[in-house]
Length: 90
Image (cartoon, rainbow, N blue to C red; front, side, top):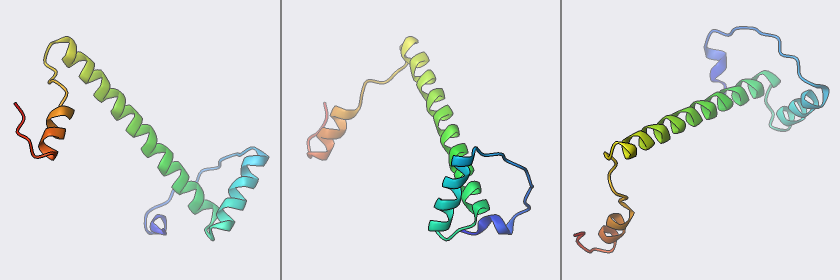
């Protein structure tokens, strides 16, 4: 994946502990990619994971508020199972 070469890049200095730097070098070299590419992809993945966790927390909070207000729909697993088995739900 070489997408980061096609966009404007910002240079920053990151200081890694020696053992982490050695692991980064070894892993990037074993994959045949530059250290920069490895770090950019790892940071992008970490950002995506954090955003997903925040979105999940917001959904859980919203679900809790809706349940407290009596607006939550009943669980749909049983109905889905019935539909998959070719039965009509009540």
